[in-house]
Amino acid sequence: MINMIEATETIKMITQENLDVRTITLGISLLDCIDSDLDKLNENIYKKITATAKDLVTVGQAIEREYGIPIVNKRISVTPIGLIGGSACKTPEDYVTIAQTLDKAAKEVGVNFIGGFSALVSKGMTRSDELLLRAIPGALSTTDRVCSSVNVGSTKCGIDMDAVRLMGEIILETAQRTAAQDSLGCAKLVVFCNAPDDNPFMAGAFHGVTEGDAVIKVGVSGPGVVKTALEQVRGESFEVLCETIKKTAFKVTRVGQLVAQEASRRLKVPFGIIDLSLAPTPAMGDSVADILCEIGLEHAGAPGTTAALALLNDQVKKGGVMASSYVGGLSGAFIPVSEDQGMIDAVEAGALSLEKLEAMTCVCSVGLDMIAIPGDTKASTISGIIADEMAIGMVNQKTTAVRLIPVIGKGVGQTVEFGGLLGHAPIMPVNPFSCQAFISRQGRIPAPIHSFKN
Image (cartoon, one colour):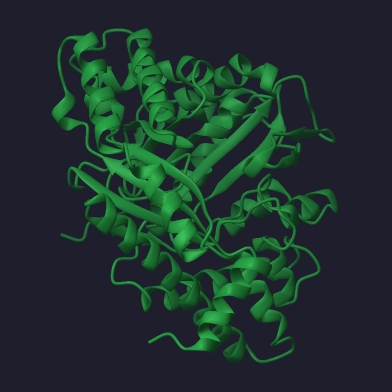
């Protein structure tokens, strides 16, 4: 039973502390849409998405009204298109037509984003996968709501360095094709190691092949709620600190569980998972970096930051798993730069570098996220950064990701403005030394020895 005190607490979280359900994401399998005729394939995809997701937005809005819980985004994820288009697509341009079909379907049903223009190439690329990768710049520059992701490594398979090298080139070409929008296309493109099949958050969401025909996935977020709770225990022991974070994460996750169950019931679609990540926004008081400061740091990036983030991530998971039987996705703390005002402040104060962010990714939920870098950065340097981050994920058996934005025409000291949830970001310097000879090697980095657990 929910008593009056708990109800009042939840209302305060929503009205004063930026608690929201960040997204209801409807995962849709497109495996039954496969056809060797490109026009027929596009027709099948459009019909499947618009039929399955026709009520998603209206149901989300109804739940918002009835329960008073903000649901910021309604989204769709689909089966990786690299698996769907293999029979019909003979050129990158063929794959671009599928991206445009996804965009058209997303607009028809009214969702904010659609994810799944993706390929899974952790051990090698098929011809179809390579065509999809080469189609990404065209896809993201000619659509508004399509998001793309590529999984180039895993603990079991190692890292496909041919794909890593190609993705450096793809990111730079995407930046150039969307230069008029400050290279915004790169904000919709993520490179993964150990990508989860059930992530509801963009830009990395896709509907895994192990999933059913359709499934509801919900992402909750409450950095402001956690920060407010920690303000009440300043100076207390680590035990008190951990207990406070756990209890708060439990309450936040219960809100998401309620929304997920209602959405599942009304849409007549099975409930998949709750992703209990702390996903910040540019809004004041809705920052993971501010939580780290409340724990005791002058700025995110100060000595002790990695330890504080590890503590936060672990306690969020421990509290959340008690609140839902099905926790999945990424789940923990996101540390994007442009989407977190506290992180932006830390970069501008000189407390946070790209290298420190990389160290922090060893213990957070994702990786190098929404980081603006100079537009003249070499493709090989971007590939080198991706390779470093993929290695962290592979060796530590965790999900890591890279979402870099080389802003064409801008350099260190300048700022790029994306607007909305994407926020703004100072352009960060990258290490100027070359890794060209390393990235030019062909083949893959083998899986680590501890991957052999059969």
